[in-house]
Image (cartoon, rainbow, N blue to C red):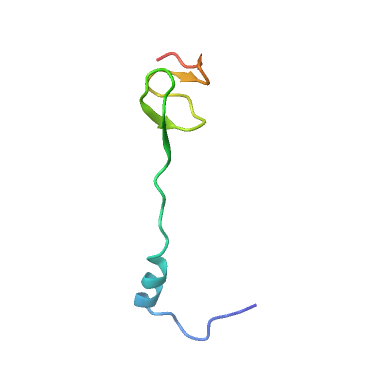
Length: 57
């Protein structure tokens, strides 16, 4: 198993981690109310999923 021989400096650690980028969640328009929502999730504003009412809002 590989073990580092020397301690990695804070600057090198942060420089390496600067490439870790979080991507914004992809939003899609609701079929019924056209509000932005997450895909494969019931719409929080109207409560529909796959053109069916699944939540009482």
